[in-house]
Image 1 (cartoon, one colour):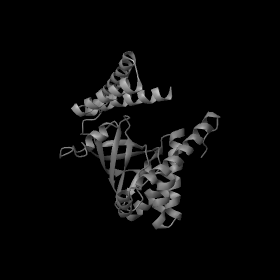
Image 2: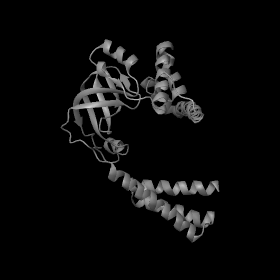
Image 3: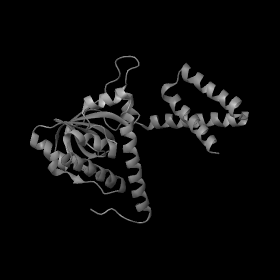
Image 4: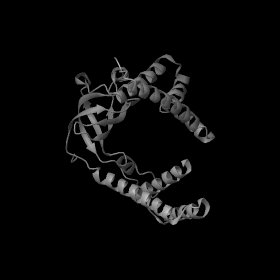
Length: 264
């Protein structure tokens, strides 16, 4: 039973992949997969037809999802109420992250920090779930300029994001707490843990500790991270962080199911 579910999951994956990257090579791979199911696994023609139906269902679902992925903006808007939905990243004088507008649309945030005092304040102040007034411009993400290179625009589109919001000003003093749902509480708890590590651990090791516990590699020195990638060890950081994140998520889900609530 478990094997058949795995094979159905593979068929579903082919269906989703066909929507974005349909070509002759993918068609050949699908045919090889169907031959494998028929000759090696021993599935009947009826079972193969069911796998084709699964591929078609997920292909249609992916197409429908793209069809619904429409923007509510024209690119001329300048004032927004943005809500931080993910952990913001402060890199030098640059604030980056994902936010949601008052219309419910996800945006990529880019903001230039003007002073060192503002940077320190934001490091302590910013929390997931904060809603702040902001002014700036909307820009369309760049497409890939070379064939087979990374298409940033498509990558964001698959996540339901069509605009980069370059903020000229964010009124942090007017920020309000948008809500205290279970997912937001978990993300903020994670952010507090990362902040604690950054403030109390030595600079040389804080990035690795953050990666091992929370699965966030953005705080590791770029040179060290490159060396890990060359040695083929970078996956160890992601796996360790994933395990901790998974166990923490299970704990909060279980606590929520038992009727326990998050208290500030």
